[in-house]
Image 1 (cartoon, rainbow, N blue to C red):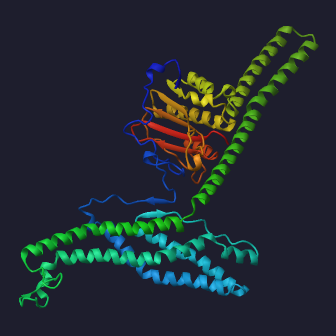
Image 2: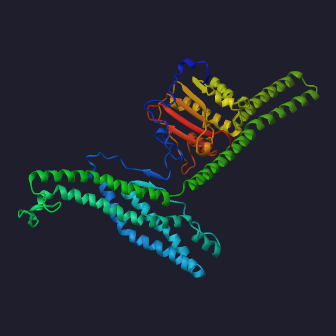
Image 3: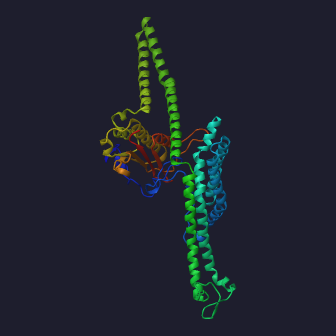
Length: 497
């Protein structure tokens, strides 16, 4: 790494890439595509609200019994759902040649969305998993478009596939779970209810009362009763995990077939983020126009008036001292206008970026009142210049985060890491991973930072604006800022846009 520091570099601690005691990879709220612990990517379509249950408490936990209730309800609904699916497919295939029949088939396919909503509600209330709903159906204009739009509704057909696949799963899962529960309860209470069983005679003529295994082996002695109780306890403690495994399969199928696809989520997210980026661009242009009109333009108008007045005084033969004073005022106003223009230009495109990202960050560190340490991976510069949009976003991300550390975090130093990732061969067929630029900005301030999404008044935090700008180029933005600090922000950007 090459180090680029401000004059007070020695005051900045050099933390490890992943600081201890924090969770730098926790996703920022409202930012899809964030990664979870150990780099595992979280599915943005589902949020698990369940807390882990200890093994010894599992048979008595409400989560276990809600899962078993889910299996009961799924079993009751499965025959009707399966019949609906079979009828929809067979009716559509048989009535395909008639227009009226296609109208009914279109309605049946769209009706699958209602089944999907019901199962998502069951999963949310009984399994503790919030599964995202797919985009609502938008009826196109025109009879034929409406007809084919309903018949081709992918969400409806995926729901019908879910109803078909879960029919055998509901029956098998319920039977297996109930068998474990029944065996466990029966074995642990056998010592009590076995006294009401009828007497049975063995081959040697003796009589016994109790559960029989084979023809001559009965559980009717204290030792055997105790052994059966122990076996029943094993079944009772295994039963929650069997139930949880079956309900987990239901949840996986619900996410896979009843939630929006990852591609559709990504498209919607990119459309939203790029729409907001366009809005931000328009707002910036309006701000520049306002600054030029109210500031620089007004100052240049004043300069023109001062020079015009000085010209009139010189033409009239007045004392040159008054004209010289006016020229001095115009000269000072011109210099102030130049400063304002430079500031506006720097906000649009920092001149330091003309010499590369490393030089721009070096300039930023030197101008910051807070000690800033920047480590730039030599591979970033060795691989050539980045795309201009990526360099600009990376620079403004670091600048905004450093500014936040100065104004709000009460930090004593900032550490910035810039490195290149994803250049090693990998994937199928020896393909190379997409190269990415990784930024990690850490300050030792008071923490508590969060991403504030736009509210009713349209106001949002600067971090939300950064997240939108990063997502506009298919990047990821991750924030970890526990109360008390430190604040760690990780940004991944594609090297080419």
